Image (spheres, rainbow, N blue to C red):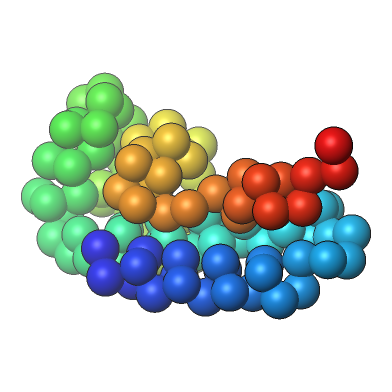
Length: 113
């Protein structure tokens, strides 16, 4: 995904510039928000109910939960907070797609050891 490349460029530069300060908790909060936002973007890109259902099934969600979520009329941001979507699009899957883990970048750059 092109957006992940841009996010990686910004976060690496941001951590290199601001990383000297002790901001581990801030990085964790930012990483959680970023993962949440990426789930929302992915959900938005799966525009049709059929596509949403097929992708949820592809990522290991059972039939009933996939039908409930795919046919939901809730907003993108609210859907991206559901446990079902978190099971489908895990943090590991986002990293596999190319997203760099901000806390690991910070630890590698500024480990106190």
